[in-house]
Length: 139
Image 1 (cartoon, one colour):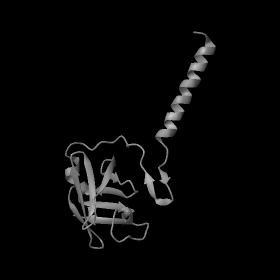
Image 2 (cartoon, rainbow, N blue to C red; image 1 turned 120 degrees about the horizontal axis):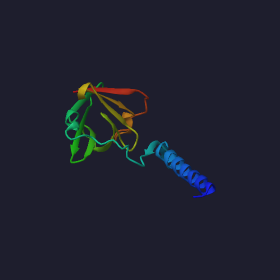
Image 3 (tube, rainbow, N blue to C red; image 1 turned 90 degrees about the vertical axis):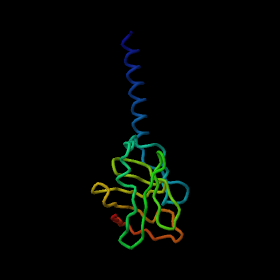
Image 4 (tube, one colour; image 1 turned 90 degrees about the horizontal axis):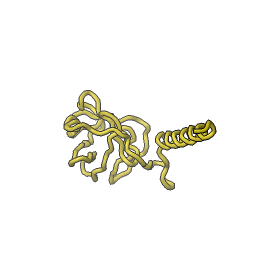
């Protein structure tokens, strides 16, 4: 191969690699006018190991007395405040899940406690104001 063709090939390869890298690390985009929503475009690449969710599939009592339950149906995971609709949660890392609307759920202490960020983004009959705090719950 001639040196000019080799250089052109490496330049093209580098451009494609950089484009793929920037797409993979893009931040979630706001959907429409609802600044409280995020669009999840791709999976994190993390997969829950068989039986891993067994440590989390319990009911937890929040500091304010409400109860949140976590469940699994085949390969999907859900969170549900008592008396409210279920919402799907997506695995991001060991013990870490998120909802499509941006609630972050992090199980701690082998599933004994859970920290929930943006709890107000879960489906609820009565909307909660955003507080910016992390809600803690225990089994």
